[in-house]
Image (cartoon, rainbow, N blue to C red; front, top):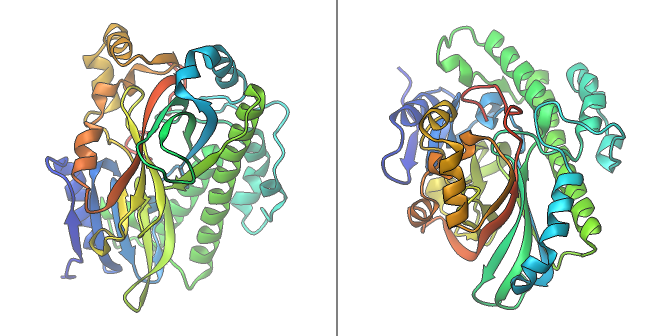
Length: 393
């Protein structure tokens, strides 16, 4: 029997199903070390909020279906006291400069140098190029969003003086191309490792010294640049529409794998729904549509594999949320928090998520809070345009 790799849990009352998935992950013969973040919940293969270091292999479903899902914030040179003056143009920008929902695309594709890169190294990647181009600059479904809000900076930092600013925040990933790549290479990994059986076959790996693993890693990195390009396009378009330029920009991604070291040992670190938090590294950890998010600076905790939570984390499934709550409940909480919601599904109601303040308190040894962001104007995928996949991210 293979000895399980060591892993540490942050937070309390973590879903037992997520812990069970983490136990499966560290039982793999390729696993070196793991960590489970305080926003952890059930995922597909590796739990969302799971971090896993392995030797010489890459695990597609430990990266996730939405490869390189990303956060980006642009801080505007406008004090928050002027928010109401600009609110209508902010709303118009959100409604016209990006699109939300499964399959959404632009009839006139946005241009970016990422589409001039090599997309021919894999027949799968090559077949997705046209679709990816049409979806470049769109925002997806599920928990993806674009929003304006109040950034509270209590001390001079990130190149800004202390104060309350208007900021624009987005969350989205690699869209349909990333999902297709994840499915293709995970199915390939399963075929290569029939010995694993269920449920471990969802953690099947590709050898980084063989063609399949090299090809997937290259595709994953391309999707990282593609997701970054989408955010760049969205921010450029929105800021141009409102006639402003950012005075500070912060971004990070999750659902990715990095080549790192544990001591002198080279490993591949998967962060599925976990924020990179190496010492001094800036990141963004959002709450829900009505709860605050935070700009953070990593503390470089080795036990967490230099990682932190990537959000509040769900405490109930989408179906459970829709059965339990009504749009009247949603409107009540939005009014209480002074949030204007342009569109979203009921499954994204704030009560479906853990308390972000509690999550942040449970990871004080992983990150320090630099600034607080409070959503005020939010756009997500309209009801009926949600991702149909279950337990995947």
